[in-house]
Length: 174
Ligand code: FES
Ligand code: FES
Image 1 (cartoon, protein in one colour):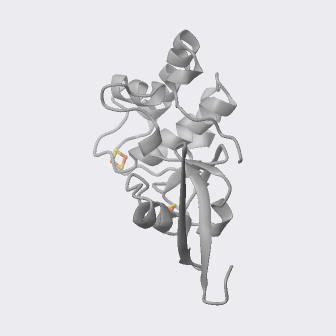
Image 2 (cartoon, helix red, strand yellow):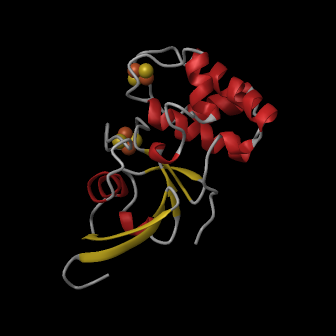
């Protein structure tokens, strides 16, 4: 950290090393979006309530509006940009499509990251564990039921096809 109110942030974003010099007060959500182009990390409430800004930081689900960017320095950070593609969706993305889990999709990146983080920790979660894992992600369109079914389906897909269907990068700290 420098006396000018700026400091350098170095992290691995979706497997690639990135760095930027940012204000000491910059939150991780803003640095991911504005410095590193990860626009799939959405800023909703900026208050820790909605979960649209969720990313995996060192394998943990983190609401990136709540932490300063410097706290993520040295970590692997994963966002929706590091998961599947339209042609090759991750297990969670595939399952959410199969189960019609979402409507407008605003909450979707955060939901996918929370579900991915859960399934990496607990490959076969109970319904209670799924509901608990998604409890920090608000959805104004759905009744959450199809998100729960989607996570159950993703667990099944991962069991049949292996964990690599969920994500490309591991949650290691560097
Ligand atoms: S923007 Fe971070 S929890 Fe809503
Ligand atoms: S699908 Fe619209 S907010 Fe969740």
